[in-house]
Length: 75
Length: 75
Image 1 (cartoon, rainbow over the protein chains, first blue to last red):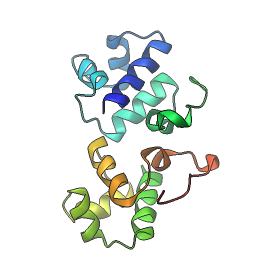
Image 2 (cartoon, rainbow over the protein chains, first blue to last red):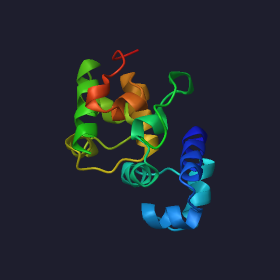
Image 3 (cartoon, one colour):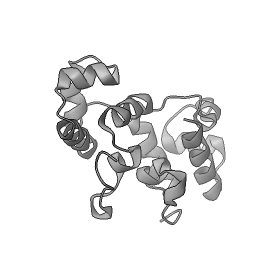
């Protein structure tokens, strides 16, 4: 889950969003974001879909193995 | 979620597992499986990780866009 959390944080940074802004877009409580991005949460698919839309990143890219090379960010 | 459910069902069939067998491997109640495979459930990442291990399919392949072509099944 740590890698997922890092990918989510990197994608948020790439969009220049604060955790508060991202929480609002995703529809989660702002206090959930640190746990989500540290890998300490167990998000549902619906939360991940909302994050992928907010950050402009595909779900596959969120889970792509490091060696497979993510497709262009923010496509 | 429908596409995810279909991918999970196809992966289970590819492994020759019944829903009961898969439920035990994934650690969910057997009655959850029909909802999971119809797209009516909102599974957590932990459930998807367990399913990907049980079915020998990567999480990225579960979410890969149809046009991107899944990597070989059961790698």
